[in-house]
Amino acid sequence: MNSTFDVAVIGAGIVGSAIARKLAGYELSVALLDARDDVGDGTSKANTAILHTGFDAKPGTLESRLVREGYHLLSEYAERTGIPVERTGALLVAWTTEELDALPGLRHKAEQNGYDRTEIVGPEEVYRQLPYLGEGALGGLTVPDESIICTWTTNLALATEAVGRGVTPLLNRAVSSVEDREGHTVLRTSGGEVRARWVVNAAGLGADVVDRLFGHDRFTVTPRRGELLVYDKSARPMADRIVLPVPSSRGKGVLISPTVYGNVLLGPTAEDLTDRTDTGTSEQGLRFLLDKGEKLMPDLLREEVTATYAGLRAASDHPDYLIEADAGRRYVLVGGIRSTGLTAGIAIAEYVAELARDAGLALVPRENLPEPPRMPNLGEAFTRPYQDAARIAADPAYGRVVCFCERVTAGEIRDTFASPIPPATLEGLRRRTRAMNGRCQGFFCGAEVKKLLEEPR
Image 1: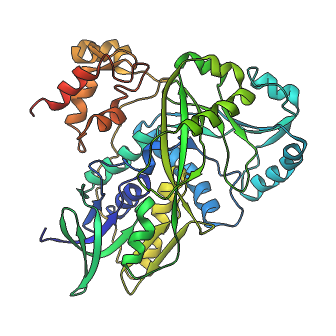
Image 2 (image 1 turned 180 degrees about the vertical axis):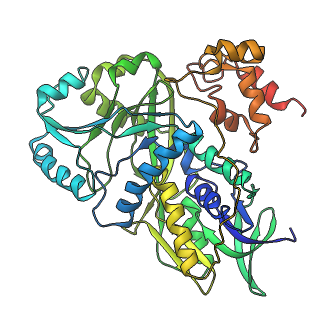
Image 3 (image 1 turned 120 degrees about the vertical axis):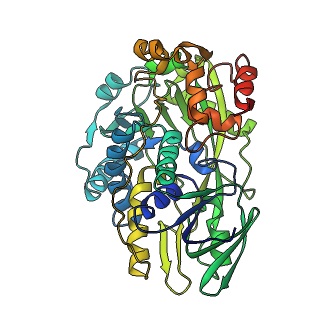
């Protein structure tokens, strides 16, 4: 590639896509690189999909600030673009005297983080809100503004708007080395060289590796595998809100959460690995979740499991988000972004733009930016094409169901291939439509969906 970009953003997950979208709002040419063949195909796709208030973040940290700001920014963005969000609320449940004694401190922490709507409740209120909860709960802390969101649509909306603003997506571009050449940075990738004046490293699990290519050695990413069980939609009445454990130093622990697709999640585990590609589930991990679930909500375990999956989180030895600019190298690191990056992504992008400007990147606002995209709805609580009589009357393809478990229509699948970032694989199609995401996991519809994917265009 002969052209030189003003900025190259490495990593097309939620954070990288948000940064590319933000920078494309200025008079800049921007490239969005990713080692995979699709946006959002790394850590972002396996997030537990909770839109966090930031009530339990460590006060005074950059993470606390950006999660708090990001909650409001993403809530507004979701409304404008049609990203499905359900305001379920959450209940933090104390099972031991030690956990019960920790609730006032958590409430105080929430207030320090600017969130004052938590309430400590007794066991009677806990069981009124969650009648299927297992025996032995001693009390709880309500967090009424915690919400669930579609992480797939969030990532795709940000990347789609970035492309609409002129960003060049460069997929299948794993960065292997970096060279300064005539005042530019040359990124050698698996798809050829990419030249840029500035580089933003939002590479997630690989952010520390890329950071070392720029001559730094300031943090290490440990892939932390989180395995989850996905229960059938019939289980949804048992968990109409997020059920949170009292957090420990290792993380937020195992939760029960509804999803915007109508299912219920149990998980995640937290297992540190060395292999940054190991997203397989394990017998040990699933047994651990079943043991936890038996205490948390035993009736849930009698429901059918639709799927099991695992994601890798970018655990870091740095205690906070690590976002710093190197003016001399014209380089910005965005590292140590944990699962809260889903909520904080747009706020992180705002912060990165400020850092880059202060480090010398000229930011001249563009005029007449296109409107944000209106995304297809994947949420079960909102009208979907197969339910929309007027839409079906105008185009019968929206009435021809292809995936019966998830009620995905031929019209929706067709539309993905006309979108600015079409799917390249069946997994990419799944994230855009929910096809093959239900009970049968593609057993009945897989052949037809694959046929539609492979049709010439």
